[in-house]
Length: 516
Image (tube, rainbow, N blue to C red; front, top):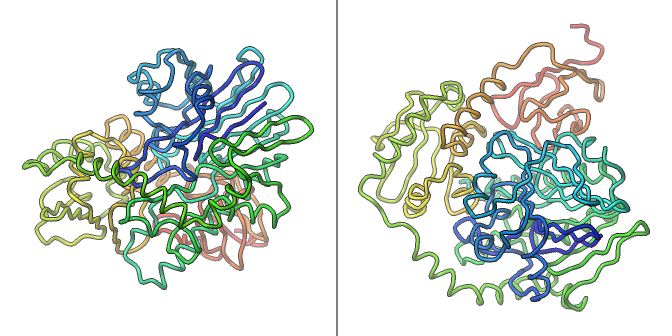
């Protein structure tokens, strides 16, 4: 088996029995905030031909750094068979059909299928927190070797991934893919604390996956992006002093080495030949030039930026200008969705202010209304360039986390702890998505009694994390008198069960010698 990096989460997997192009991303994503790092706009013609004419195409999920509509529409062969994860909705399948891909295999979660000697299984995660469209992990075997392409799927059941057999090569995300905390209004000192905690949480989660899957070698992938817009350039982590959650591959390779795991650095075009005896790595550039990408990163990014600035300026000119009826459009769109979601609205429990330059809009969750701001109190606030909101409204984007927030082109403020239901609303702007978001809110806020318990570090607690139901026997770690769920870094006071990350979660916990 051969695995060739396409850039970011993209991989071309080639076996004697067929090939799979995974998550090819080339066009800048999220309002051109994210560019592929290292750059992948200089791949060889031969590699591009193999990518474009692979036997199978796998898209892990709907986010723009994995699903590149423009590139797929203009480059990918329509003869390719698309492997669709077994998500609860058919949103991804319908999207691929709209792009002209009609050779579809819809897989069943976790079930291995035989593609003429190449065996694949796709495991899905479907929490609303990652968007109702879900996320997925691909497992591929050619009979001699096995590859797990986890990309940025936060898999909860690690046993399912290793049930197919020993893993030779494990590709996974280790870096940030979120706007928090950089867009929030905080002092530099507090931002430093939040950024460091987030990076540590990301690394801890990735290392937990590395330990549990126990592959012969690990390839850090699916990040970080490059931020080439001068307005966002500070989000690139170059010296390590930046207030950013986007460390690069070399940083995580250092962590792997410190924990005695074998890591492989892959840049776009790097080929990794996998055999039962191990992996052989071939870079598309001399080793010194590969090293210089990271050791002289600012120079590399500056040259990359200069090449793309004319394109970026032209692209910004396409953003939708202000309209006269934005409030009425949002009211007609959102108020019926709010009426569908009384539990979610109650969980948000306050007003959200959207400041769009000369227009301010209140999203009144308690009343289920959208209207112009009239000096009402609010607990959440977003400051966004109006043209960005006009664009996602014109596109009727049903997931603003994907369409808008991941761009990092906004500022945010909140009074109090993180409220996931606010963001779940913005991820669920269709009838189908809102129906699932409301159902999950009801499930989380009124969970069934008598769930399974585990003992950990002298405490008995519910096995499922109250945040996203991660198995705490796998992801739970105790620091002093605090439980840390390393899947997302959420923390709980072990004496009270109080969630220290958000105000709307409580861990059912007691000391092991407490008979109550």
